Image (cartoon, rainbow, N blue to C red; front, side, top):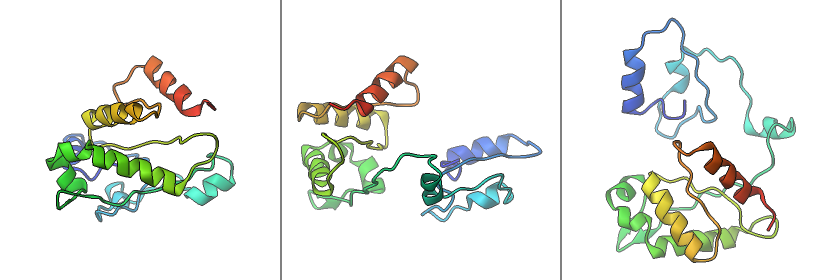
Length: 161
C-alpha cells in the first residue's frame, strides 16, 4: 500500500466499500505525513522491521544509498522539478553523477549491482540506455513486463560476471 496516499489510489479506495481493508507495505511511516495505519483502521496483521527481517534470514543483506539531489542549470533536481523537466532526469550530467556516487559508496563483489527507482517507464528506459552506453549492463523493468523479461532482468542482476 505504498501508494495508498496518492489521489488516484484514494479515488479507487473511495469507490469500493468493503467491510474490511487489508493492506501491506514496507514503508508505513511516510515522509509526506500520510497515515497508512489510519487508512486501515490500525488493523495490523503482522509487523516486522528491516533489522528483524534480516536477523531472521528473511532477506539478504543489502546496502541502500539514497543519492542526494543534484543541481542542473541552477535548478535543484527533486521529485517536483524532475517531473517538470524530464530532460534533466536523463541528462548526461545526472547519469555521470549517479555513476560517481555508485563508485564513491562502493559495492560488494566484482561489479556494481543495483536498482534505480524511476518516476516513469520512459525515464527508466532512457537511463538504462545511457548506463549501457557507459559499459554497465542494465535493463528497464516496469509493472507490465512479461515474465520472460522479468526473469532476464533477475538473471542480469544476480549473475556474477
